[in-house]
Amino acid sequence: MIQAQSLTKRYGSKTAVDAVDFTVQPGRVTGFLGPNGAGKSTTMRMIVGLDRPSHGSVTVNGKQYREHKAPLREVGVLLDAKAIHTGRSAYNHLLAMAATHSIPASRVKQVIELTGLDSVARKRVGGFSLGMGQRLGIAAALLGDPATLILDEPVNGLDPEGVQWVRHLVRHLAAEGRTVLLSSHLMSEMAVTADHLIVLGRGKVIADAPVAELIGAATRKVVRVRTPYAPELAALFQSADITVTRTEADLLEIVGITAADIGNQAARAGIALHELTPISASLEEAYMSLTQNDVEYRTGGTSDDPAAEYSAADLTESVR
Image (cartoon, rainbow, N blue to C red; front, top):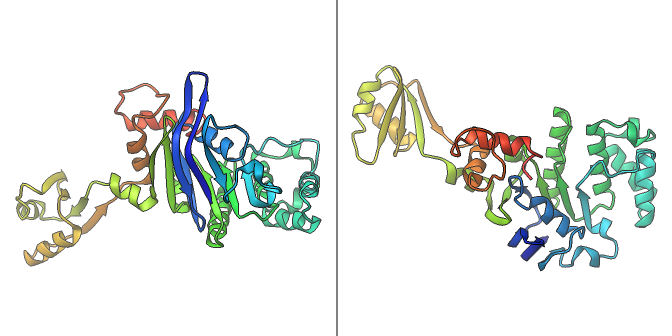
């Protein structure tokens, strides 16, 4: 478990993280999101003792990171996969880490196999692709078989097979009862990987809820209906509480009534329906709605242009 209480970090007059409180529970994958300048990277650095809080505290499994006698066995961390001695082989890099934490060499072989590095384990890390470097970083995080994992952009540089592998891996680790904190700028991937989300904006927690709840809150209750009898169907819903918009000759978008009720009333009226689809927001849309006032950098366009805001968040150092 990771627990932050009034966690604050100031750099001179700038407050990067502003009295945040959150708990990352074991047994689920918690996504950690935020636009540029939100304080996400600073928070992750404070969790693992790389930055000291100006105020408040953050603990991992009940202790501050530096209080753990064998931190690699408690917390697996991937913050910068490139922070590796490029002259060493992957095997020797992991072996050196294992030796300093009394981890047997057999575990090194296990994580090499688990992360698909068998064929390159004896090669120098300096020649690795970005994706192979990410796999090595994940192997290092798993080396101590820790109860808690903190992975910053673990799918960066991975091919589709690698992305799917990370997804299955973190969900499996969470199912084993481990604590998993995961950041990513790929909203589509986070939507199918994370169970819960913590979202930062301008140094504060602006959301801390299950993924489904965040998407539901951002979703207008719209039902798309396709029928050759669009005018007749629209006439059934003449109510102040219901809005009907005809977007094509045979297509309606109806707000204020459920798909089931639309189907029932159409059936009673003898109106054939060719499509009846409730429309839900995507996680990307929910995220943009949450953070629209917290984006530090914007591309050209009006301030209420979600596409412009997403481009800024996506192209300037991911969503950190």
